[in-house]
Length: 207
Image (tube, rainbow, N blue to C red; front, side, top):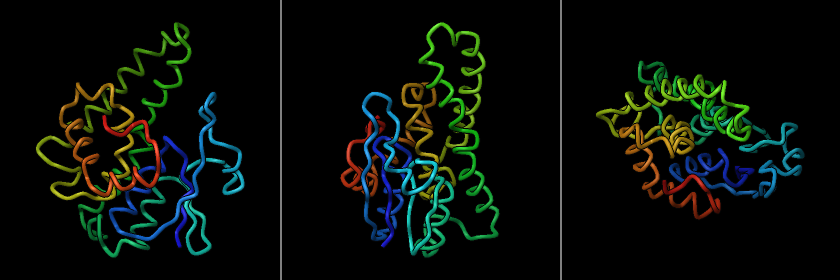
């Protein structure tokens, strides 16, 4: 059975959600962040040398990186669901979003998180980070205007992969109404709610 090594308040929550959408059987091994440092526990190092989550194990194979995990699960367990047909133009757009989420979308959000701990020392960086946030969140918002999901009227793995970007930007989403409506639409899905029940507390839910 597929195993998800799940860290609380992490990107692994969207892996649980994907599996719930598919109805794929899986088991969870839970890990808790250090309450002070918010870092993953050293036990994850025994699963993979980077000691990060998400990590999945399936049929003797260990897979890391959210985009690669989404891709693997859909190819191995999806049966053609939650992604466009390979070779279609829609598939190329879908694949772009899979890579964009961590390759570009999360970078300014992570920079804001880390520099926010520096106080006034981060002041010289703030204008550039704010500019990049507006650039990327504006791009996502425009891509969602007039549609329910990133590729149109149907949920795909791209929405699941991109959901963490939208959730991580929750205090900024009032400026981006299409993105805000999309995140709320995702969080209302029954499979999303089931993943919360199985995964445990997730600070980015419900907002």
